[in-house]
Length: 185
Image (cartoon, rainbow, N blue to C red; front, side, top):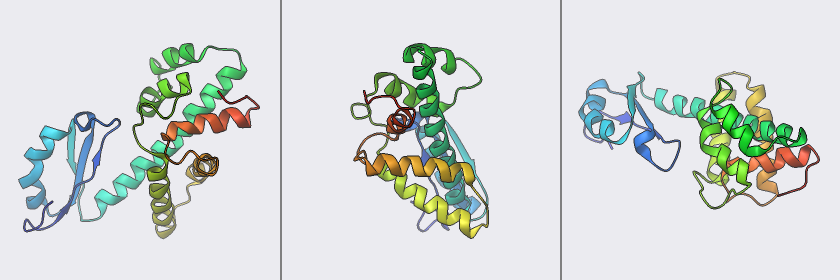
């Protein structure tokens, strides 16, 4: 995107398929970044320059580390709620309005309520698994333990092993329900 401008890296994070609600950030040459900033301000809600080249990739890894963990946290919450006899819609309504919520919960919670992970896909599990591999490698290179991420990654890989690679990553809710002894569906 920035060839001839000095070089910069510009990932775009969009919680849905709509980039306007997303966050754009870049790293590398500040002048190159500032030249393309107006374009990204039209596409994203927030735009940040993060510093030296490579910081953008690291931030994308940090973002997807949290997405991976939040997917599993939301799935576990719905599984626990179902075991407790609470209606999934009530779980969504209460948690999405509370401090316990997250953007992942707000976006993927409705899929967990309906147990439909194939109609309104925000991303494919297969793509997140690629990111999980990159994040794991990056964390090892940084000598940074990521135990919560490691556990959440295993749950995502379990969903893949059960044939859900093309489903939304919210499908980890099914894995949590199965671990809790709840039937599919």
